[in-house]
Image 1: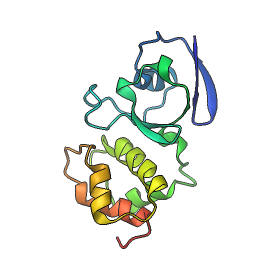
Image 2: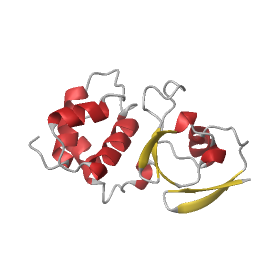
Image 3: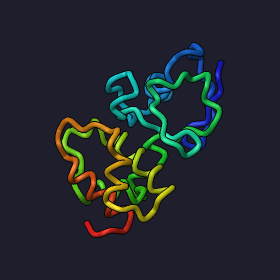
Amino acid sequence: MTTITVNGKEHEVAAAADTPLLYVLRNELQLNGPKFGCGLAQCGACTVHIDGKPARSCSVPVSSVKGRVTTVEGLGTPEKPHPLQAAFVAEQAAQCGYCINGMIMTASAFLAQNPRPSEQQIRAAMDGNLCRCGTHMRILRAVRRAAGGAA
């Protein structure tokens, strides 16, 4: 048994030590925000926060998780969304929505460290997240909006 803290709640999970955190989140804890994209930590769809830092959960063994895990479900609620979640809705930044978990989780960790970024800094921070639908411009506008910049 491994104990992990996810979205402020402690969970005992029965997964093998080398099981990717993503599988535990989705299969054992029924958190469907993080997505399986590439399985190689290259696309960003599985991004979560571990102690506030973005991590690709598809490549993190559950046994190595020592800090607090936050998923997109833990950022806000439907009644009170996180400002970034609200900005993504306002900018209609999702098309298929598959990448949005990773985009929001990456952007929220970035904005926590750099609340007033330049356009170039936003682009650099989001560069490792892939979107096959091509809503990159809306995503960038949403991040700018959440940072207090002009949409």
